[in-house]
Image 1: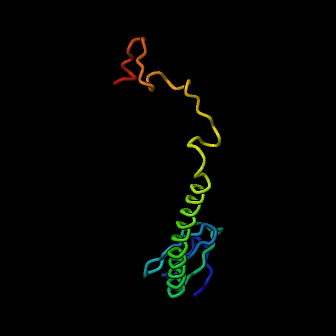
Image 2 (image 1 turned 45 degrees about the vertical axis):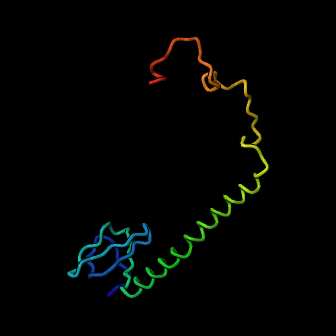
Image 3 (image 1 turned 135 degrees about the vertical axis):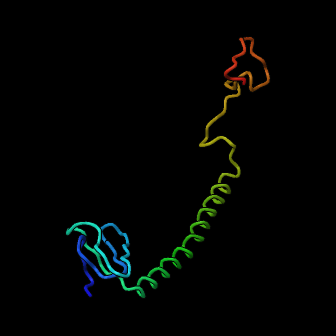
Length: 119
């Protein structure tokens, strides 16, 4: 049993890892031909190693994701706390009350009604 194989060649059953594309290929019980040509290299991964690596990656994912969520919450609350005394305008923008549209202020315009805006 060889640990290294190339694409396009017959191989025994098992799991093969292509480090160039970071993908796994599984060959059935009777074996088969690895995909690709002679420039594609594969490493045969024994099942116990695959299970241990899978468990470690799953555990790392389960540990890191909650911490990433907490970091996001702390950043959000930190920004809210730092801007608690500031106005609602973003980045110091000043809102000019004279620039607000007349329809928003409750006054009706004297122009014709536009169906595309009111339907």
